[in-house]
Length: 110
Length: 113
Image 1: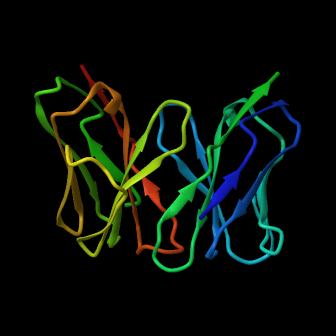
Image 2: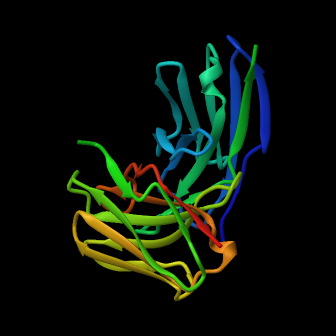
């Protein structure tokens, strides 16, 4: 079985930093993806972690701890356009496809 | 070209109609996916094609029928749908199945009346 948990909603202020957590339980693990999805649009890729540690890409960073079944997405210098849903997705071992968490709806306010 | 295209963007159909959704990519990807997404929910996987062969069917009703005519095209044939099938249908592709980024198309917004 598989279980992916992330907060349903978060609110943060423009210019601030926000951390969106994701915990997962899987029978096999082959990596974790973060996607951003604006309302009514398709998901777009943000990051992929398969090894422990922090991956930084501009204002966005993603962290993974395999032993803890835990990841977070860190967004710095928040902008209004960052208001979106952020989807954590886990890839199991073998050729099984991604399993998405329920997503975190982030609202950035002035 | 890192784009996945989908047509049509919007589709309204009656419960007795037959229609098809189309998806195309020219990135040389050998894995293609159909997802269904309801409002404020994550995408739900429907089908996976790997090297033009159906590799995963997530217990989708037979009123949805996928087809992969070649490595660049993916169709979803619709027949006798129900109003609860109204959703955003997303196509995605990746280099192969496994640890590869999935590129999503813009989706087809389907309304069944």
